[in-house]
Length: 155
Image (cartoon, rainbow, N blue to C red; front, top):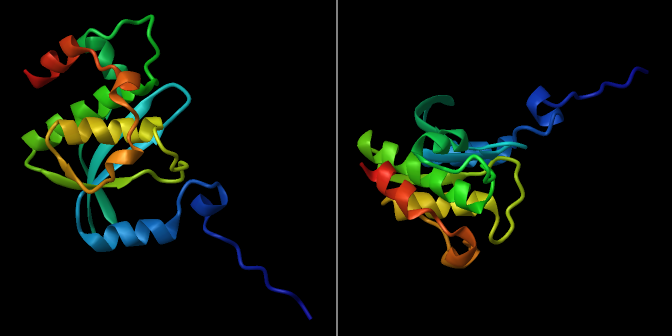
């Protein structure tokens, strides 16, 4: 007798999508703050889903910080860059009329004080309402955001 093998979805096999977590996020009906870490950048997006089809409202990339005066000798994937990228994305979302969001960190591990939560802290400081515990954020001494860049983003 031949044995049938159930093949997982391709994005699950490649360890890119957690479909159970995605389903829960989509059921809420709240816009998502999507945060992704790559080997070089931090990427943040605000997405609205209708019938499991995502529409990206605004996006920010840590590479954009160079236009705002971030020193090229600094890393654009450290805690400060993650904080400013989340801040920049939240400012753009507020201009688009989105004030609340839920966090979507994808398949990244959720550890206290990592870059993902620095981006969430930046979005909260920009005025977005995100339900998140304060003790999971990194300390502001570690983030150390550049005040000049914050002023340029707010203009």
